[in-house]
Image 1 (cartoon, rainbow, N blue to C red):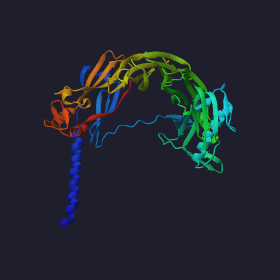
Image 2: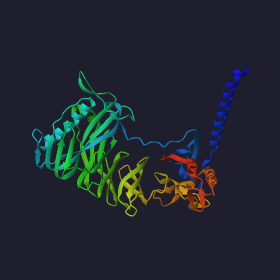
Image 3: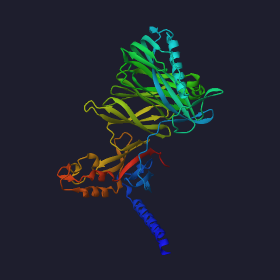
Length: 515
């Protein structure tokens, strides 16, 4: 009888020990130091801001929230994974129901200009209007046959023209649920070819004015493909990527340009999303929608690029560059320019990221410009902060070289950063020959809006000093394959260091003044 109960008792004891161990570790992590130590100024400067993130190692995770100057913590026994960036989509109202809209595939089309000389093989279109229609129908029909699993043979041949114009065809997807997979689905039944529920594909015509000089040969193959050749080589299209925003159920598209090297004109192209939805699937209807409004057109070339478009409150922000100048333009939803600001940068910008804040009567934006250094040949960054008021007026707050913070956010009257500094440790960079391994300490700093005055500075205190002692303890003064000044590393030291505590998923927001 005793033996029958020995194994269950042992299992139960082991479970109790495991639970007790986990509770003990949880208790230790709940006691983990994570607090703000005031260094300079009044901590009330932190109150309009909130910061969330994770602090942990490869085995434990401490989620935290800093709000109203106080930190709350929550422990979990799993590694904090970096949050993947979701594809941008917008929630809109279509026929009284919520739909989620995303930009999908896009393709460039090279058509002859109105005055171009056109020579076509027998049976192929030989006018500009007929060719545009034929190329579009061919595209829709080939996709329909592919999606229905059918095979068709399309007319083949060549069409030559003396000069061309590049246009963009952009597809838009409507989903009835957020973050759905991109699946085009149509079926053929008694009522003909129809779209399946849940996903709707639509297509718009983006009339960029990008001329293409020189003779072009358009080649049609039996599978419905269209290719372009020049001097027996495939035509190289300018790098134009459609980007857009949605405001009040209207889509505003533009073309992000880099390395255009051919002069042209690009602006902002507005589309009504209800009308676009009602147009039906192009693979069935062979319909595309043209813009109901075009504005903000400007020249693009090797130095003048379109960088993007953003929605800022109720306004549109059009972002361009001309050599070492960034040009910012605000527009209302009817296409009227409200303000324009030129900002000088040290190097030429070729792309950017941004973060936004909002408050009553305005918005704050922090740009991180990616530039290619003339001196090093490597990518570097510059940072610009602006405010935009309710009338669309742009106020330039500051532009600096670099991005001297881990995270930052604009406030209405101040600017918050999380800054990282190397700890002053014995041996310093001689001991830690890899700069990223030198122990760090972190500071929350609230600046005036122009970044000229420190309103508050506090150290984000952690138990990382324990990790520093552990790192030093892992070093031995004996020969090994890895050398650090007068010290030598044991072979597994870098693996040991990599599991130490660190911050992830830091997010900072401006919540507004409290009353």
